[in-house]
Image 1: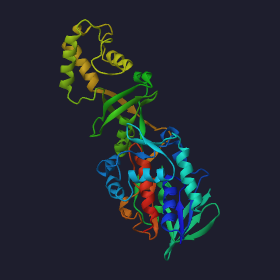
Image 2: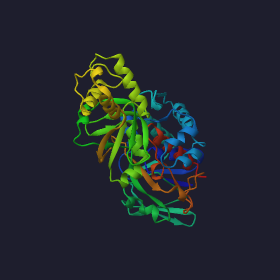
Image 3: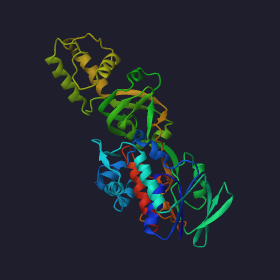
Image 4: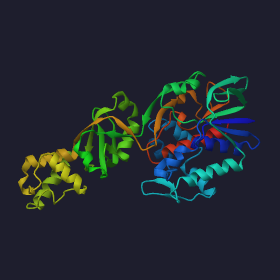
Length: 403
């Protein structure tokens, strides 16, 4: 049996390895259109590679996928986060789990994961062709013919796994649409919010944790750490919003208002009461020096200035009006977002091959026999925290069974 894997990324390598492990006599070849292999693995997690997430509860895990959650719930029963950790550790890669649930190699170096995958490929005699761009797949009886642009020739395979990653444009998916697959428009996911010409960017590097973030005019809400950058907002709370709101925010052309609750307290009256009690306990203290909440000092001073209260004002001098101002700024601080910035280099695309076109038990195409899909080419994407790599390992494993 001849098996082609299109794409030399995480899903492609994992699909190829598992195809060869399952079908030991098969000839498996990985085709990568660039000269770089496992490039996203290299840069993930700031070069540390966030391999997976430490949670093992499928009932929780599948909720981390804004698109494809139901599919992942089924697929994770075949190959889950525990399986991923065991797989790498069995190959000699020690892992550890951070407090936030993210799992990294103990070396804190993505090269550990790259070396592991490349060694497996070498040991299994899986071939790799770089600079090999597949431009067409043509079904021929029970086989599939791959057209390569560079060599201008065709190679016939018994099974093909497409794991070439997400395409930023719909046109990049036409070669698969032409086979009869339904395509979901590719849209950026996991991006940060640009807040141009706003004073808060002077607080760059500051982290507030936890905050509640809400896109006004929508039901989109998230809770978690928020990072102030020199261009706007980032951090898990924002990235989660961008993932779940990918399609809505694209329709808004990335022009919208984000409302921040700096104290993670939904009940405004509770905040008002707390501020009143705090004021009565610290009557002669200035509002800048005595904080009612555990906020970073620079943020607290910025919020006081933003709601036009004087820095040397004492708590006893605030009155009802002053308490109201503070309550409002802490609970309903609004910022105009204008545009997005890709989250570091970890660009994630939602959209791709519609799950309606795929058998979710095997990841085989419903419209083209012996053709399988794995990784980001599928309309499955997760929030930050190791979920996207887990989707790559899970779908790569399932597609690699070639069942």
